[in-house]
Image 1 (cartoon, rainbow, N blue to C red):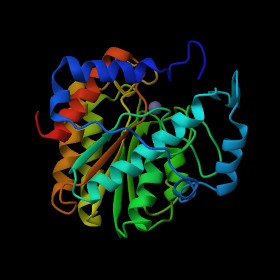
Image 2 (cartoon, rainbow, N blue to C red):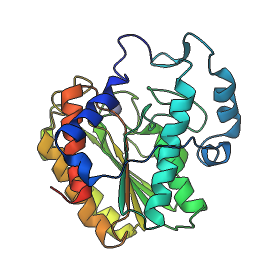
Image 3 (cartoon, rainbow, N blue to C red):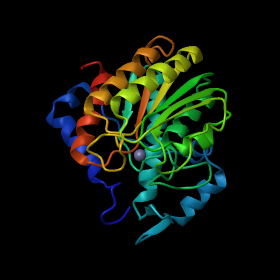
Image 4 (cartoon, protein in one colour):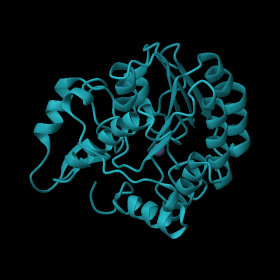
Length: 293
Ligand SMILES: [Zn+2]
């Protein structure tokens, strides 16, 4: 994204190093993410937009897509692989090769709308995975849980009104992208949280709103937009969550997903910019996903 940008390559290095150093890697099977195809991307994005991004990718230097989002010559392959990771993870989980998958990807995806890049995001990786599960694998009900500190406006834009999907989200009120307070469709469950409301407000939101809606919906598969920027060490937001909150939210989602989804979960990395915290909290999240907590 350019010099000094928080959405930097070191994020994935920090995660990879920490998974190795803590021994957690021995419980995981790594896969190389393939590039998503035009057909796969066009299930979530306007094909005109996908063509425009492919044509706009610079051969050198930087191209600004929005005030926060740039492309360099490596960005298009990275964005294609980030979305392709969600597709491969969906295939692996639905073929039974693995039960749960975590996509350590960047750029993140949940701000990319049907026809625009924004907020560090080029393609909405998780939405591409969800549409793949619905349209290629024929699932009828899929849930998305988004706990990034920012509202997943791109996922809402793409998935609102798609009754095969239930999206539950929490985010800090009044923060970028400055929307989401009023959900745009009946399949959107948006819970804005007040700055400095801490883990207590998160737990209340999940227990009183998310879990009953998820239980009633009975999803066949759960996707997670796993953003870690609500942590108190991350200066992107002020929700003040702790490591324990990310473990708790993962456990709560797995509990509700385990029965109707038969444990099928695909989690995609979204935000989280303080590197030490990011690595630690991704590990805590993955530890819950692997059942080694
Ligand atoms: Zn975020």
